[in-house]
Structures are given as C-alpha cells and as structure tokens.
Length: 420
Ligand code: GDP
Ligand code: IMO
Ligand code: MG
Image (tube, rainbow, N blue to C red; front, side, top):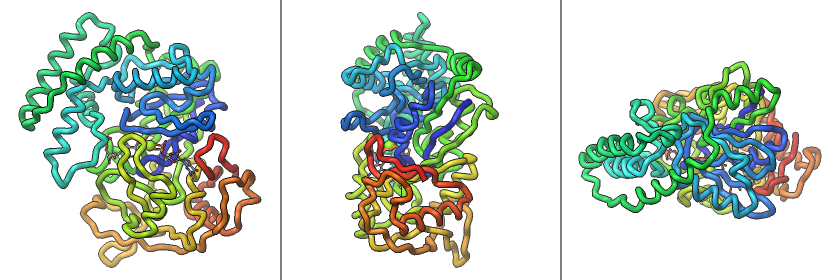
C-alpha cells in the first residue's frame, strides 16, 4: 500500500516537515521525481536540516529511504548530504537505497541550465540552476546516463560522448565558464555513489509492498510546477503530481491509497511566472518576513500572496487528493483581515477554472474576506482549542474543496501539528 504526500501549490508547502512527521507510520519513504532543486526543511532535536536529494524519512531509524527512478540525481549534492546526515548519526549505508534507473545530473547539465537561462533574459524561468531541465531533456531525448551505468566499465566513454554533445550546445550559447572544478567534484562523488546501495527500484519496492509494507511517496516541487499541468513554461521538468508516483517508482496506480495534499494557509512562489494572488505590498512583505519565506535551496526571497482556491481545486482534481494538510497557519496569527481567492476575473468574466496560459492573461482575483483570529496558535495542541475565526477559515476551505483539511501545522517544529 502506498500513500503520497505532495505539494498543491508552487512548492515549499512544508513537505519535508510533514513527511518527517508521518514517516513513523511507514516502512519505506521514497522520492519519485525532481532532484536537488528541492529543498525540504525539517527539524530534528531543534536542529534545522535541509534535504535536497535524500528522502525526508532518513532521520527515522530502520526506515528504508529510496531515491526512485523518476528522480534526477546530482552525485555531488548527494555525497555532501550523506556526509551531513552521517554527522547527525544517520546510518545512510543501511537506510538509503538508489534506483539503478535514476538519471544522473552531469556538470554540463548545470552549465546548460545556466546558459539556457542567460539566453532567455527577461523571459527566464527562474530555475534553481541545478541542471534539472537539461537532465530530464537527456532522459526523454534518450541520451542520459543512469546510476546503473556507473557500474559499467564503459562509463567514462559514455560520459565523454555525452559531454562532447553538451559542449556543442554550450558553444552555441557562447558559454565560456570553466567547469573543471565541477567535473573533479563529480568524478570524486561518483566513486562514493558506487559504494551505496544501488538497487533495481521497481522490484525492490514492489516486493516490499507485496509483503504488506507501507510506502510513503514524497513529492518535490508542487502541482502548479508540474510539467504538464503547471503554469507552463514557468514550471519544472518533471511530473510533480500523483501520476508521477507510478512512473517515478514503478508501482501500479491501484496500489495508491491516500493522496495527502499540502497547502500553506497562504501562497508563495519562487522564480518567474504567473501568480494571480501575489501581494506586492506591505501585507506581502509581512508574510515573507513572518514566514521566513526565503528559498531553502537558493535563498531567493519568495513571492507571497493569499491562498488561491481556483489553483487549489485544480490541484486536488489532478492529484485525486483525499486529505489536506494546511501548513504555516501560525504565520497569519496577527493579521486583522485574511483573504481567499474564490475565482478569477478575466476579460470582465468570472472564471473558476485555470486558464490555458495564465501568463498571457490579466487575471484579477475575486476575494472572500475573513476576519483574522489575532491569537497565537503556535502552542495549540488540539483542534477544539483553535480560535473560532480560524475554524471558520478552515471550514470555508473544506466546503469549497469538498475535501477535509485533516491536519493543521502551526509551527516548524516536529510535533507542531494539530489533527482536525
Ligand atoms: P518544502 O520544500 O515543501 O519541504 O518546504 P520548505 O522546507 O522549502 O519550506 C517550508 C518552510 O516552512 C521551512 O522553513 C519549514 O521549517 C517551515 N514550516 C513548515 N511548516 C511550518 C508551519 O506550520 N509553521 C511555520 N511557522 N513554519 C513552518
Ligand atoms: P521544493 O521541493 C519551490 C521552481 C524554480 C523555478 C522553476 C523551475 O523545495 O518545494 P528548476 O530548477 O526545476 O528548473 O526550476 O521551479 N522550483 C521550486 N520552487 N520549491 C521547489 O522545490 C522548487 N523546485 C523548483 O524556482 O521557478
Ligand atoms: Mg522547499
């Protein structure tokens, strides 16, 4: 049986914290897509940890953590991350497994990402520059190298062939950066990677499911960054939605039970692209500062705005969400008024659906206004003790989506979560 936890917005919904919280109920925690563009924050013994490649179940003893075939893997990031979790007592040699089908991010993928973004100028995606797009392009273009290829004597030849192809592309971009240091690090890191548990991920996970073990699939990015259903072209290059779990781990759809969708109590986005409820005012600045909304991977300030029910309803539909977790409700504690976008005004017409190309339209959000709860909720432990005004806010969302908000996260701490 497989449950999924994924983001319903533009990423950074708090997946790391929530996966860490639920991991105790599972045997296997598996990443199914994305790569080091992800930055998943969790707190262990009050220490802040940000994971980019390793699944967020790694701090639980005796849990299997699998990097699935749908992920793109940067060996350099993985090596550094393994070293940092080991320093905190994690036995990654025992608990971390990597699918042999996982595609590798090469130094030239990172260079190509940078060259491509530079060439786009004003129209840049706002990529994390981790090489994600170029690595997935090589996967679908049938050129990429996979973790299993490292065990082949031919690997260096394959690497040189692909590198030459990339060099021609880089020459076209007139990209001149010296990447010798990156390559040195890469070759050092692949020697390390070879010593880890490299498995046939699809048999590995299905055998566990057949034995009755419970799997938690951990999404990266968010549904509105999905390559098909997100705000294309301002998206990432993978299937961030629940469908991606099947192709990203090699499991059948009927094995999936719960799809737990995470939304912040408001909304953020980092990088370029449409964001109808964005607040470019003092309230937006307040949310950014109170919520410490700065990228976990790049440190960039996140754009902040009100919760967008049109986007949320769309994400719930695409994913088949069965339960919702609302995070960062505590950040709204001191606001006098809260707003929820219930529809869009486009060309004078009210719309309740996500349009084809949001970036080419002027979208005016139509808001429902709520009185803020003006109470510190960060220490509340049971839902009954939540302020009535906050319950009104939650009930509006439950009713709008027809899906229950089952959990409310009221602080970054491991146990700061309230069951509704
Ligand atoms: P992820 O990418 O979805 O894992 O999210 P990030 O880790 O990039 O960003 C979420 C940030 O919010 C992190 O700094 C978390 O520690 C923090 N966080 C998560 N849940 C809560 C919450 O309920 N309240 C507060 N105040 N912070 C939270
Ligand atoms: P987590 O898992 C927020 C955004 C980038 C950019 C776009 C494409 O921490 O929620 P890419 O590097 O994939 O080419 O960037 O997607 N992006 C994220 N935004 N959280 C993330 O991951 C993101 N991963 C990518 O900012 O706009
Ligand atoms: Mg993040």
